[in-house]
Amino acid sequence: MKKFLFLNVCIVFSIIINLQSAKSQSIATYDNLTLSPNSAWYGSDNSGGFSDAGFFFENSFTDFGGGMFAWYGFAYSNKTDSVTNGYTNQFSSVTGNGALNSTNYAVSYINYDWMNNYQMHPNVLRFSTPKTISGFYACNNTYAYFSMLNGDGALAKKFGGATGNDPDWFKLQVKGYRNGNMVDTVNFFLADFRYANNAQDYILKTWKWVDLSVLGNVDSLSFGLTSSDNGAYGMNTPAYFCLDNFNGVNPYLSVNDINNSDVQISIYPNPFADNIHIYSTSINTKSLIIYDLNGKEVSRKEFSSQNATINLADLTSGVYFVKVSGSDFNHYQKIIKK
Image (cartoon, rainbow, N blue to C red):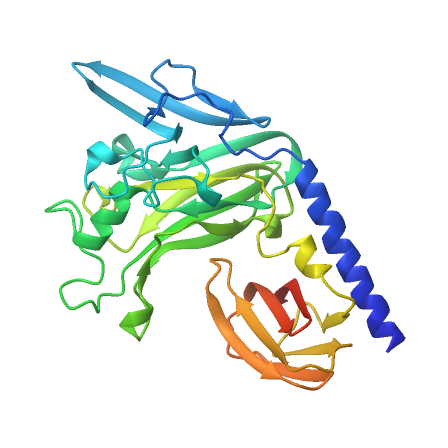
């Protein structure tokens, strides 16, 4: 028992230290960037990008005259239009605000290079020194959301098709690099219609956390978008997504939640193959909830003993967040399925 308690104390202290470090590190919230009401900055000054919290978000802008322009990269916005469909609403989030009800947020538009067979040209974020990025909040852009929800004429299809059974998807891919070599990729689905039960299909309409800490120390990140809907000119789904609180504090790991009682929890092994073992000093009935990196609940178990073995063989390999709860405590932890 002492061994388990010591292990748990180490885990808790490690999480608290990491969270306190995250709170003191640079977080790009975009709230200190000046905007007129209901407006957006998208590079028309040809500055090549903007800075926030020590991060430089690259941008490219071309003015064709007569009110016609092209841009790609990162923009920032405080637009609140969450209901208007179409290209003219390309700088709004589908929530009508930023994450955690903030005013400002960033918009990312991925360029598809027409000179090179419409290949995706990912947006890149570089750092002066390698660092571990905790993650960011993501949600759909209003233009992209309604294109997937209703279709966009001859430009893009309605996700799910006429019957709702088409296995459509829209995926954000964040790749981490160090010294020019790709370290790993985090995949985040902005829409997913591949479920056997159509009731589980979704087009993301809220801000969800994208965990990047699994990439470890990186010196650059690339952001790309792929879709099941493609044509002769590349991806048909509008190549936009919104982001906020870049390098912020992971909402699934809270110091207050971990430290809210004297109950000690040990979850091991980590990484695990099929089973995890849970030791608790609480005698109360407990629940175990597993969330994927989208924040979606993927498993729920109940147990009452202080020593429990939980089978999670049905989970695919990857990173998850686990919440163990009782009447007198909540405990959050990241786990990895091998």
